[in-house]
Length: 96
Image (cartoon, rainbow, N blue to C red; front, side, top):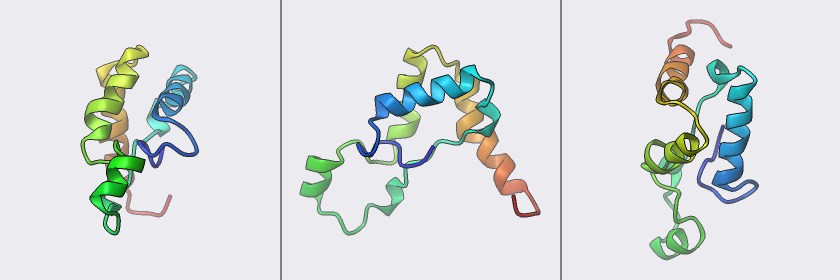
C-alpha cells in the first residue's frame, strides 16, 4: 500500500479500511506499508503544512498503525506488514 498519508486518491481512513478488508481475506502476508515521505524535498514547509501535513516519516509507524489497531488489526499483523513482508522482498535473490 503506497503513498499512505497523502490525501489523494484515498484518505488514510479509506486506506486503513482497504487494508483491514485485505487482512480479513487472508492477504496480510502480501501487504507492505509505504509512504514515500523521504521524497519530500522540493516542497516548502508552508506547502507541506497546508496540503500534506501527515506526510512524514513517523506517520506509518505511529498514526497509521493506530488507525489499523482501531479497526482491530493486531500488533502481529502490523509488524508483519512493516517488518517481515518488506524483509522477505529485500532478501529475495531473484526478481519477483
